[in-house]
Length: 581
Ligand code: ADP
Image 1: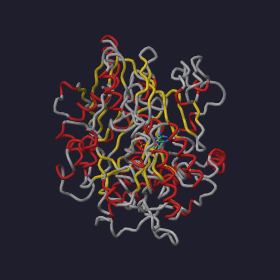
Image 2: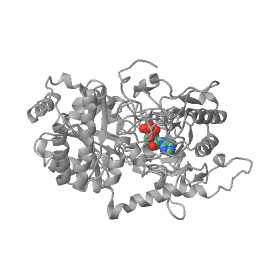
Image 3: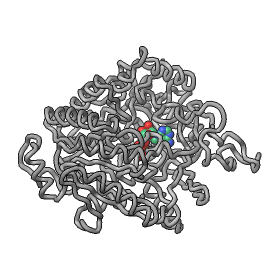
């Protein structure tokens, strides 16, 4: 084992009773065994899995060195690269990369047989929410993206793509460019292009073009259930007239409307496979935006901190009325400042920055305390008309300024947003994570009404609490069709246990603060899933009881992602898996 900064930190699980290595052991012993599994059983399990996938597709996590792939560009597949609990707390026992759908089905059968939990991920870059780490230590990570990474179809007429889990936003964009399709179709991208489209979409991630609500824009899924059964949702369950009885189900030509109409017939089941532990998504359709034939991004700087109220009141009618065509963002000055430099480049103070210092940073960067990034889509007359309305509305805020990217060639944020808002992926936004040394982050992501009152109240609580715990407030409001995702970026130093623990305490208190005011989070890190699930407790936790009933019916042995989003199968005692600070 390598010596490391984490050597003194406890393993999540000490190896259970009497599990000395077998004489003839060919499989390495993992750092962490699956629950209720001794080393012997684990060896047999791994041999069985390797007989399906080939041993080259099975990695037992036996060495801490595996846990030092902790860079977005080289992400670890068995742990959380932005871990807020100690590094070896949430790790997989092994990572398995299925080659195809039948491999996934066989793996599920073997996991059921051995009662070993499995945690699927597509790329594992789920930064701020847990990366590739499993909720239950010692689970087997299922690396869906390593081999299953094809763009199966891009349909220009129907403006959609059919994808496998390993297709990243960058890869689909590249595919469109390489196949000369970019003049016809755009892919919506989030801030960073390296994540999986399937992973991000089923976690209900967002981007910034008019197609920014990814889950809204998905259409049709192929899913392996916990018992290994393969299903297609929506129109996909209606066989195509071209069905070929010599082919296995996953290779059958799909119904021609699978990617065109989401709902099919009967109950609409796609939702149970989103933020879920009920299925492994092996194919998914995604609507692509038709190139609008004209594009102009812009920045509106809003000078004063207290302008937040009026800014949001200005945004709401424009967004609900679709004059704001895309998913725009209202960013706090420090988010932009952090992309442009680390904390040391602005201050030597250890305490959180105060208003005067924030004003000075805004002035030095030529930005406002809040900065609004949007775009206009369509032929020039359409854009000109939209811009007139937007400009007139925002002009009621004293001191606002309007910029196009060509007027600020050195503003790296505006230049990056210019690309992102037209579906061109970048990695630039990674830079704000370096605000602190050894920077890592947690996202606190409550949903807000698009009202000045709600925005100001959320900003007040989250900033005050951040400062109480010694952090600068860094955040952004992402404006959806009827609500805002308020994303608070809690940047901490992952090598400093004190910084990590303060971040963890901060988010826990914020979840309670928010719930007391009727605000809930749309998504969260593994370590906070139980707490957030417990806040969605209308009528004596009736939603959780429904979720548990479905979970226990579809996955009676509780092998698929136990604990995900706070849903525990009946054979698990959640108190055994509590994550303490
Ligand atoms: P990213 O695309 O950002 O790299 P991940 O691949 O890490 O994201 O996926 C994020 C989460 O989404 C995973 O932890 C898992 O819970 C879920 N997930 C991802 N891919 C799949 C899949 N193919 N099937 C089922 N769940 C998945």
